Length: 180
Image (cartoon, rainbow, N blue to C red; front, side, top):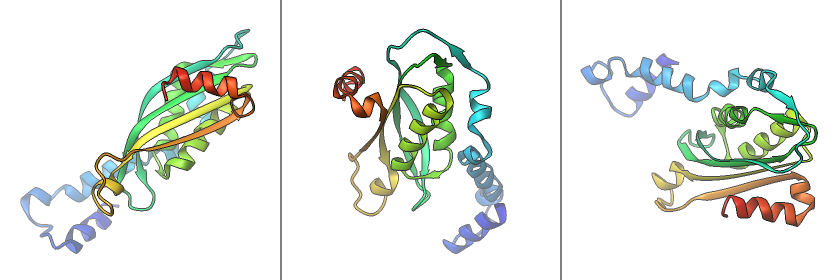
């Protein structure tokens, strides 16, 4: 990958032998490996048996989970936060696992719409909840730095499964609690 970054640097008209750029291809390759580490992760490994029996059937929400991803169209960052809720049905998941699931999918070349769906289905698959809700709010640098150059724009996506899709009161409670 470092060789590819060296070619990109040359392609933009820079001198790859310039002191400030000597190690840039290696640093950029290492950064890209970190930013796309989600491809090397699996849901089973992330969850790692952190599923516990529970009689609770009330809504569990983890909100304001910061996320950083790369737009698959331009490979520019989008940055935001995820709000994830589920209705337990005999099982709960470790709270940190929800944030790790968001990170696993965010650390891939991605579109926000798909990220939202992937997180919802992953939670559903992991614990068989009665319902899962995911809302992601993000700012996309591909819209801010290039193209339409709209600095204050943001995008909100949602995915509702089970009771969150079928019961407007449950969905409304979730949206009220995350203040959307």
